[in-house]
Length: 115
Length: 115
Image (cartoon, rainbow over all chains, first blue to last red; front, side):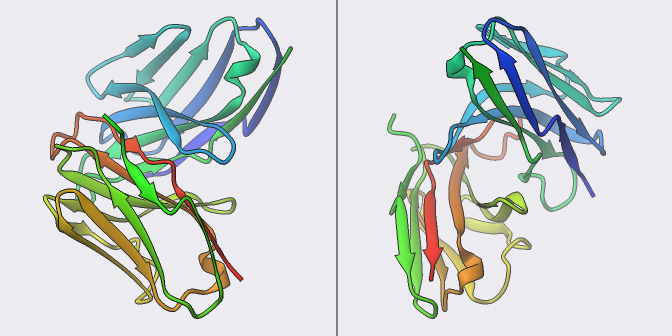
């Protein structure tokens, strides 16, 4: 059974710091991995999508990497800002069985960037 | 594009009442997913449809839950009778067809409170 773990569960940093959020998954048979952002009381906003054949994706100050063989992904945020404060969720899309469409989510990392 | 549209945004109901949540996927997206989010369990897939056909409903908690997709632009999730433990945020998401390389787009969610 695929399990997705995100460490740390919460992170507080001063503004301007570069930071890394970690995501690990137990089964490497995935189609892709997606990072989302969720603001309190809001829905999920897709940040980056990495296909299983890719190593990384970049969007602005965000860079996500994927090492499928070791079951790991990282989300790198450069020059953090208070507006980056949110919960960041990692999700993998299964590549086998009847639930191939299923996204399995981690519990998220709650990020707080202090001014 | 208006994105994935869910209604209502908030629903408060008494135990035993029927609750219907609604979702309009992005036009042209052939896959639709219903997720539930709670503090304890995080995001869990309830059911997903492809071309209006339910593909995997193994996440539906029990017979009190039912979902339909009568056409490509509308889906409902019904709980009858509702119970306090059903209180959660329910998200709908859509994705372009069976190309699993595509990512998901989520709606803003329906916050359900059963008292």
